[in-house]
Image (cartoon, rainbow, N blue to C red; front, side, top):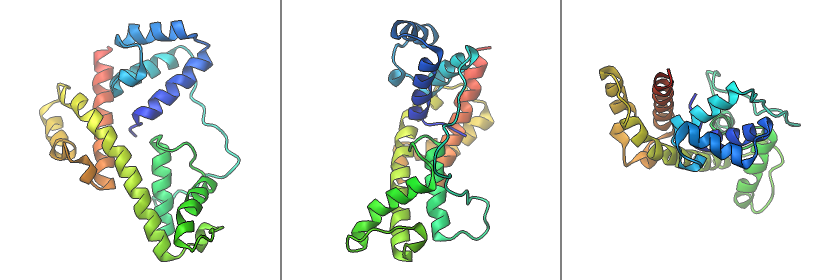
Length: 213
């Protein structure tokens, strides 16, 4: 799955520390690989190139162990409840690097803060205690947040996709998943943006690998 730009940058900085690179060496490597000395100035393909280089030098991406359990995965359930949908959005945002913590406790903390004002300033202590109206409101709030972040990423990545020498069938797919929404990504729904990001990530990754052969 596509990783967000912020997630790539986060991993690169973790890699810098794990490999023991000082600032001078770090900037030197960035310039050698991309001709840029800042991750913020890089596109997705360039960030992937830097991360892959770090991995070739011994950087190991290790998932941190959390004290709380991960929020239950609900994607494969046939009949999803409102709470399942809330959890699914939360997990998806964590997977893309938009939030730091994907645990059930983190979701509860966010939900409590948001729901408190809907419950006459009384905190909700368990997700299962949320009323349907509250759950619907929280889902819509989370969707808006998720859409805003994905739309921002797509606005940055669409020009990179257009610069690729795509095959005819890839151009057709790019038109379907991305170009038809250019300039109006913020109006897309979650499914449309996830599809656009996944396709863009696949193409940028594919042509990055080709250019490095």
